[in-house]
Amino acid sequence: MSRQFITEAVMMAIYGQLLVPKTPVEYIVPYTTILELYELRESGEPLMNIPDDDQHVKVKIGELIAYFEEPLNQKKIRRCLNVPWAKSPAILLGEQSQITIINSVDNASYGETFDPIETELLLSSQREKIPILTDQFEMIHRIIDGGIPVTVYDIDDFEFAMEEETFRRSH
Image (tube, rainbow, N blue to C red; front, side, top):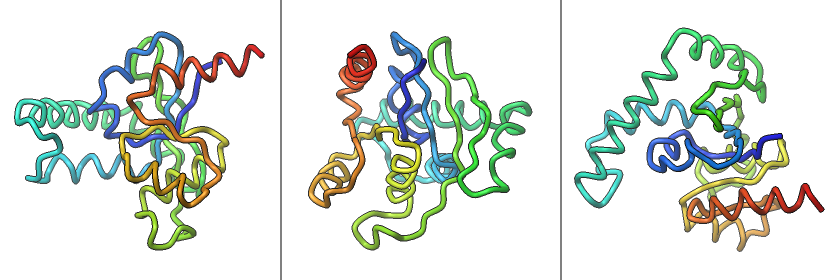
């Protein structure tokens, strides 16, 4: 069985190591984060502090968009868009990684504390009972401070998160 995480699509572009894990992993990604890729691609705002890194990430975002727009992948994504909380069939991202799109719905249950995408990540995590994987340090602190009932891992702890689940399953 593969390890599962709720995360944003842009994480696949920024953190290449997510695409080449040592053991199988499935990323469940809210559809709105796929739409966000288009906004990030068009934005003139830098995503990374170092210009070469920023250019690299923008190229990777373009590649990810093109991959999602391939006819078979586009068909899989469209399947989940008619029903709230429906999930797409898995889309392979590599030998050990795959992505599933979820048609999450922001119901503003976390008000002003979390933005709409963060809310969708939280609700998806709660609904699917799967931890969140993020690089948003401030969001992690708001989750902890707010006592939100989800497990969250910093992306820098990805390998630990993979091992942690393996340990839980074997004991």
